[in-house]
Amino acid sequence: MAKIQLFDFELSGNCYKIRLLLAMLGITYERVRVDSTAGETQTAEFKALNPRGQIPVLVDDDTVIWDSMAILVYLARRQGDTRWLPDDALGEARVMQWLAVSENELLYGLARARVAVLFDKPFDIAQCHRDATPGVNAMEQQLSTADWLAADHPTIADIACYPYVSLAEEGQFALAPYPAVRAWLARIEALPGWQPLRA
Ligand SMILES: N[C@@H](CCC(=O)N[C@@H](CS)C(=O)NCC(=O)O)C(=O)O
Image 1 (spheres, rainbow, N blue to C red):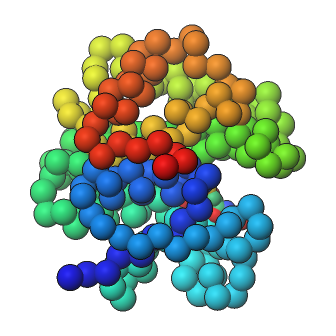
Image 2 (tube, rainbow, N blue to C red):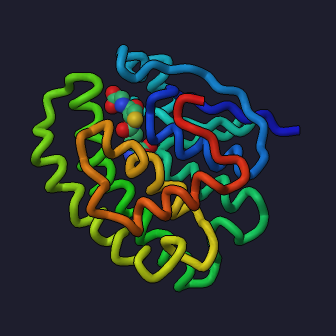
């Protein structure tokens, strides 16, 4: 049986995406703790795995994959069905559209505001909130008429966007004006395999 390792830090929303999908797929794996707040992603040894010096990194036997978006795509496809990532042109594009939001507005807006608050990083929190707003607005619009972001069932689009939205208030970004987004968070939290960040 393949041995899967996740290079992971418990407070990282990017790593949380991968832990969620692995749990929802029922895949067992080993967690290797890398404290990104203590410089452990910047060692020569770690950069041999990911030259960008970032977690998450997934190792599947001899195959190394870095970047949460790439890892989500890999795990969804590795499963051998199209449940989490449709393979028709429009279905796949709809998922990619939300993966782009997760890596732009949510990462440079919500995630940065959170690290500014939790780890005292020098990001301008008000600017982060302005950067996040178009992405969260787009989610609210989509989820006002649909249960899920990209299809009529959960996909990796939902998994990619969930962590930093669910943790938005740790970065002082209020979710009160976003009722459809809050209802979607509750739907994700009811999925089999869901676990909290600090599990
Ligand atoms: N686009 C990357 C972003 C990964 C990322 O920013 N990881 C953070 C932890 S959440 C990290 O490793 N930061 C350490 C550093 O940049 O030195 C992904 O989605 O995997």
